[in-house]
Image 1: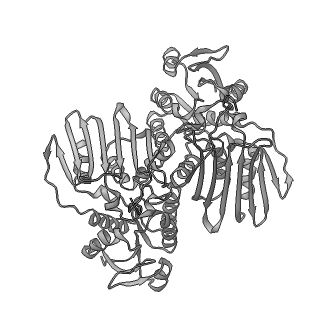
Image 2: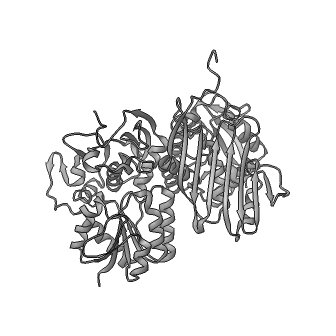
Image 3: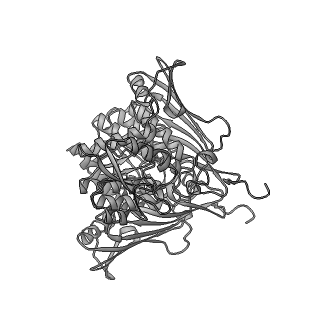
Length: 314
Length: 314
């Protein structure tokens, strides 16, 4: 098949760090245009908006959206209504309902919608799912602690209402949890910590229940200095599984398993191409639903203000 | 058909105000037992827990759950797993995921689950839906303002995490909105006002978008003294529809339409009986999903503390 002509929208950190390198390696896609308010991509036609891009280049068959979630629905709806396949960065939207609307639009326009969860394509995730299948799971412990100043420097949108705060990385953990567990879970207790000057939490503690008294506990923190932690530990009747480095490293009873190199975004684009070829969509809202549940059910506590750069004089 | 033998669980205000009178009128159900921590029902066998009730009376075919949402999932899951049909008061749960789990349990156990929205059975709702069908809707304005001290005297659970606060009545409005609109909507802006001593909001302002530039605005307030307001106004290309009194009164271009008397809970039990007879379930999560979206997307502001009784000395 000829490569799918693709336009990339929202040229920021994640587009440059991940999407552009993966697209440059992909035989499935041909990056022909970019749309972004503030930046272009060298060597491809660049536009200030998605509308202008699709007007000027009707040959574009698919768009991939990398801007923050608060701005994504309008652009995704426009592209779907104009008959283009759409791939969404995570989280797929600022609300569950707007993503439900996009799924309906994709179906009624006969195009593919792919709501991506890049962490599900980490090397250890499929092997972890396979290993857990059929075992009795007793307890799962999720620890996701990272330094927001390092990973999201100056990205104030992440602490705005709808920006998810620490759930922006935490939803990656939840996307792995919901992928590797063979049964559903539901939140029973949550505590969210908000900086007094911000609208999204900087830390969260979650407790989920599941069938047969399984317990799943998750701790997310955006204030981790020094070593960063992205671990999922699963205790079963046949040993202990540990995914670390966000799913890149898998240990069974302490023994590291051989893994292929990290290639999450290559995996996403391969899956997007497969969905387009098959005429299907993939929109799994479970990770975002658990986050919405945490905001709905969670107790709120307030902590000291957060600044990306220390205030003058500090 | 013989009446379905039913156990009522959670004997509080809503059970006494609505469920018991409706059950006493229903030919579809025979109330044979009650389970509640603190209270019984005169003339029927009363138990301290659902488990004890089902152990003692295996002939019970269905249970109806009236306790606050934070406690409902465990009891509903137990009843479904033991092969009983289950009817849930609104909201159907403290999280979306736990209700998804119940829906799965009902399906796998071959019993009916009915997540009720009593306001959808208000007299004006079906006529409003019929009148709106096929008209071009321009704007919808929802105003839901009531006195929490009057309607929920001393019910502190409503302001606890997961109690929903002003969304406890507001979700009634959303259940009507999502029933009468012929298209989906999605939240685009929300502001939630929390008393500084409470974990759930006492007021909320919501803005939704929909297809074709329709706008839906909702204002919920739990601090309304004097006249109470439960209004939905819909401006269309062919006139203005107004539902008031929570759906009991319907006006078209100012002219009041003849309506049958209010019989919301009679309608719920009739629907539950029909679902059981047909072997089906009805679990529409849209109202709760919009509330979760509001917690997820909403800006938070803090207001003065709220007390059901004025503090001593005030």
